[in-house]
Length: 318
Length: 101
Image (cartoon, rainbow over all chains, first blue to last red; front, top):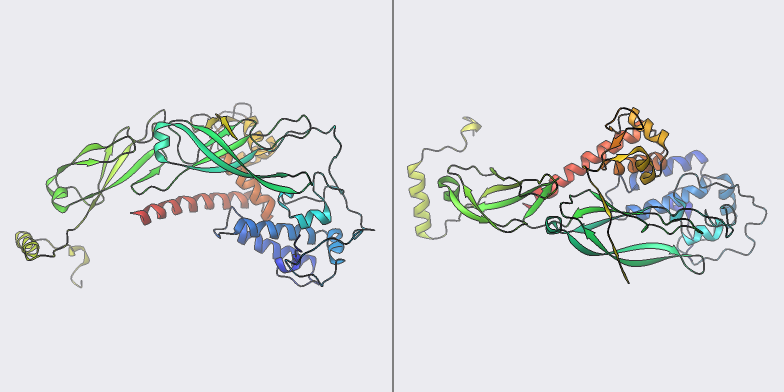
């Protein structure tokens, strides 16, 4: 097991005051809180910081921790000395803020588990409690939302191993994805959360839906957007073009004098919720390069027929 | 081993009651009532017994509770942060789309 240097994690020296500790924690919590932070390792860092604060904010735990001495280094292999906590009395219910399930082996070897440990909890085999609800985000394809169907998902979770330490387990669920689901919606799977204690019922599992990024499609609620590249003459003269959509390709009529960025709405071809969304085709005009003499000539003929100043809004100075 | 499971979709059409919201977010009814008073949640229905919440409220309640607990801010502060975070989510989503095209 690795030693955790809680002072180092919070960027403090060992003689920091309780106020210093609180200030350092709050600052790091704002930086690494998983709801707030965009750093990749935010969740890990936040757990570390919370664990450090859990110990150092509590004068009893801090004194016990300090007693291990200052010779230990972060990450060093560590076993608690036998009877290290003799003479320290810990109150129950000291786990006030952070979620105690996320603490490290190191923490648990010193202070026990919040729910089973020597310093708290309601031990004993006659204790029943409902398991916690759990949450996970899953990625599906947009096409799944059009068709519905079963998808295999693999979830990682930690549970208590035979030696009382948390171990990470994987499990695979085959989840039925209903037709018409949109991003951000949740699916509740009853009884698939954390197991209960004793005869307590298992919690529920909540899955939040996200769509895998797609080369052509993006969604906004139940509406779907597809960008359609067109040639300048197609936009100017009008055209009939085949467009791929998640429910199969359709022929779309581009009206004459369409603008770049213009949107064509195909009603009811968005995600098939009870009231289906719309599909928007966004026109993107692609300029052909003038590489050959004939192509350059065509552009020159083009220019000679138009009195067109694309910079007229920029005024005289431009 | 693969379990075959089928769940209930919590969508906008399926509104949740006060009791369901409390259970899903593991908060008590007083807390939800405070959030309604603060304008964090806007249920339909005339009183707590009739309240129905959009299912997207579930995420907001959880987030506000986490921010209060972990950052030591009060409800008004957590509500402000949650709203700004939702705005950031929307802007990031837009940015992603623009980047794709």
